[in-house]
Image (tube, rainbow, N blue to C red; front, top):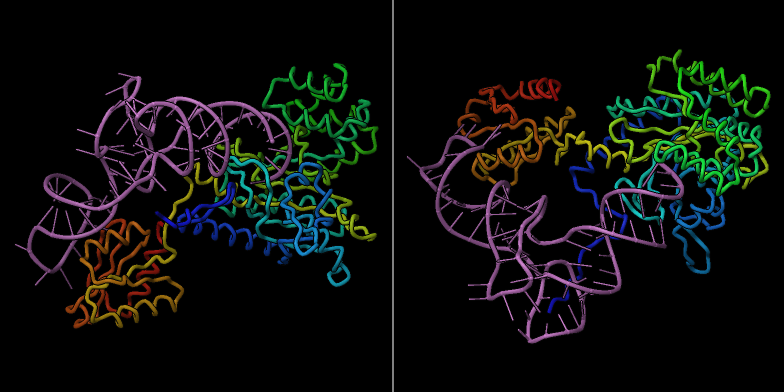
Length: 443
RNA sequence: GUGGGUGUAGCUCAGUUGGUUAGAGCGCGAGAUUGUGGAUCUCGAAGUCGCCGGUUCGAGUCCGGUCAUCCACCCCA
């Protein structure tokens, strides 16, 4: 009879082993570096909020996915994103913060939805937002941040799709479909997955749209050609609509400014079929797809919301920002085998040649750590071959070996574990410099 | 929430029309004259066959439920 409890995790919740956690932490560091570089300041908020704070802010769907429960008579819920808590945070502290205010926030969020690869019930988001301004400059900057973020994560095969809800809304208004915006956009979003005819049929069934209406809409959304062409056509046909005109101009500015700022052509594209996002988006919207794994979905999305904080304060707090889906991107990189995973954060491995010299081994390790190089001393004086195998498997780059003869001579042997090349008789004082030089190399 | 696929040693998988002590490869551990690792060889550890229940003389093998995972819908990071 066993009274052991089966070790297990909840559906959609996962453990992270070192091989995955090391790159995950690295990603967080990169995101932090990029955000701070733009002047976004760090904040944090509680995982748990009063349910009323979170309910009804992201649409019906997000309400259903909320982890919500009664605790001590309080109706509470786990945050399902970082944007809504931020809106609450901003409304509460704006007098201290002043506007415009730029913040980044990285932490776990929870959604009780069905799981799939890259879709979890607990996952980290890395948000950045600028609030207190409606200036398109903030929208433009957000696109640049997303780009630099992806590049900072060593990715270059990705595309940032941008659109503007004003354009879509204006377009639908002109087509006489203003009342069914949400329904139509939901169908529209399926373009690319299902044939155009099916999209039209669905629009007709669900939103009562006519063939003439959907034809005109789809023609536009599917328009091919340069950004200038597409924008030009939009202007010509819908420029008289105030919303559309505003949206078109903001998109045009964004695309032009991105190029001027140095973003390579093709990294940011106009995509009129990008309609999604939570209910609160009102202007620019962004979605970022990996060229080699588009199916996993957007890994960094966001947009402009001009009235989100209006739910908590009378002060106008428009904003724009986006969120990196850390765990989804991590799953994607894992799938694409782009993680050169290591099970140790310390590049240097110090062989325990003989137990009597443990103090000397730790002395060397401390000397390396003092100059910022991680070093680990093997805990047992096992056979050297075994220690080497352990070291390479773990992902250590360099091994340091010293036995009685070496201590007599005051030297160390420095070994490149991957190349299996050893440099013998290195004076103790030169070891750190040599190690650093070797680590800088190929990586 | 709906529909479907999968679930056998750490990993990848075999397991015949249900029938005696459940297998392989890789990996792992020990060893092949006590200062050095990817080859070879020898030996070895390791599986409640996801979990619970049912049918049966007998179930990894059939049935039901459940959990997890993957895929589609939905939605999104």
